[in-house]
Image 1 (cartoon, each protein chain N blue to C red):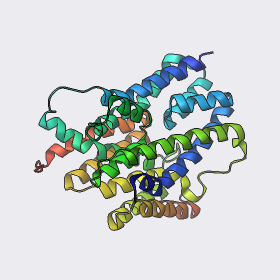
Image 2 (cartoon, helix red, strand yellow):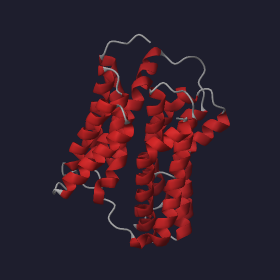
Image 3 (tube, each protein chain N blue to C red):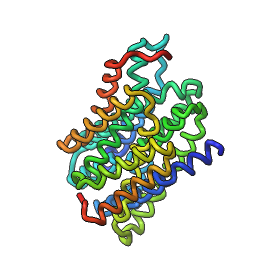
Image 4 (cartoon, rainbow over the protein chains, first blue to last red):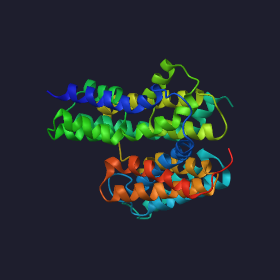
Length: 104
Length: 224
């Protein structure tokens, strides 16, 4: 049975992806270009997660509801600067559009 | 409002959605032939949603240890980027604390934590409380789904499954402060979406997330 070796190997590798950059300390200050890159990194990763989730929401390409839901969440976020409000607005738009037939 | 309370007050849609997906995962794991203990062990040991679904699917298909482990590594390589981006905020924490906080690093905890830090906060409570709550939701839901999951309905109803993506969108929208941020974010979102549509799901986020920040160099450097 390969279950336990596969799960433990997967778990160890996953933990290394999470911990290595936090465990290793490099001497000296980071070069300026690297700092600029790292400054832009968080937004890029979160936006990439968002883009991937909008394009293929549940294993199949979007039928359009998620695109409008994302636009609504972004607009509400910019307007009210309130995370909860923006999330609930985006979810509501997706629910209404899916009910109207825009399913993937 | 304290950071701990804010983490729950702002994060509950994400926690709820993770629980719904966790129940689904428990159910899928059981249907793929895992016992309740095995299903629960995958959630404790790997603790990464997309990678767990992929691993269970591969195991059911008879894949070997190297294929399962390498697929999981590829899907989770994005954590390398997230942990790198978190480094400056965890600089003053002890090594033991950093290693503990690394275990609860997920897409959701990263996004919520960065959102908190970008609003000017420097405490780790918000990230810790949200990350630990997510761990509890995911692992509790896995057990529930594996033990009793056959009775659940369709999680796509009411659009609940969209709450995680909506949170990422909103965190970006609220966090963007400069034209350079907006350009990087839009490029990353489009690139990751296109890669996933083209079938490159495993590398979509890590590739788009790693390349898009280079666009920041097209803008004049801001004074720190």
